[in-house]
Amino acid sequence: MAIEVFNRYENKYVVDEKTLTKLQRGLSDYMELDAYNKQHETYTISNIYYDTPDSNLIRTSLAKPRYKEKLRLRAYGVPEGDAMVYVEIKKKFSGIVNKRRSAMRLDEAYAFLQSGNMPETKPYMNSQVLKEIEYVLQQHALVPTLYLSYDRQAYFGIGQHDIRVSFDTNIQTRRTNLHLESGMFGRPLLDTGTWLMEIKVAQSIPVWLCHLLSEHKLYPTSFSKYGAEYQQTLKEHVPQKIYTIVHEYTRQANQQLVMA
Image (cartoon, rainbow, N blue to C red; front, side):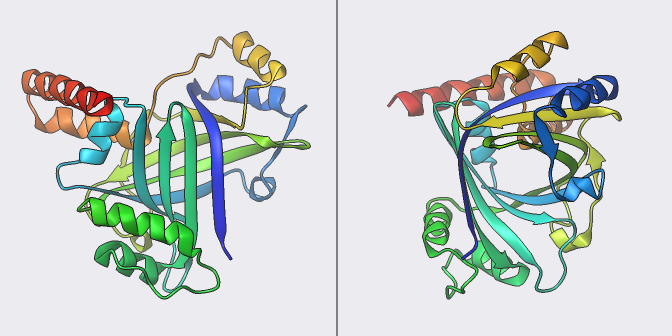
């Protein structure tokens, strides 16, 4: 049965290539490269994010409520035909990230996410995860909204499976041709040479890593790939004054919903 469940804290940092090289040297004493990165400098992750036609999920997320969720279809590289992909639901409550996913064939995943109806369970699927996703699909009229891909280099703690550090670059997005099999292309989200570092831990960041971050004057930032793209798109299509009013209204409205 293909299932992966994660409960962890996530911290994000934006770094340049010079700092990246220094961090890689510092990590080498405590962490090792992902098995795939030992053969290739990076590997590619591609996603389709699902949202309501009025972008309710990402608007709610940007308002920073105690609870938020995202639904996406994920592949490693460019899938073809009956390639295995992952349907994922990512939730965040009071700073703790919970990610649940189940493997599906590409055509099965498209059919499930479009219809909202549970498929016949196969050995590589997890029915519990799919039931949770089915419930989300029944609660929201979700449609494919954004394609987002990036190249990743990942490290795992030596003898510590509860810590992971990843570096993402070449982040590309598009809002048309929302099919994973169409390939990796789109507009860049970050400047060339900029990397997004994510530290994922089950409990707290180890002291040695805190020292490494302090040495390079790195501080956590609130950065969501989907959120950054949404804000970028909104600014391009909405006059600044209206954008500010809408953003503030959404933030206040979602705060009231969370408190209710």
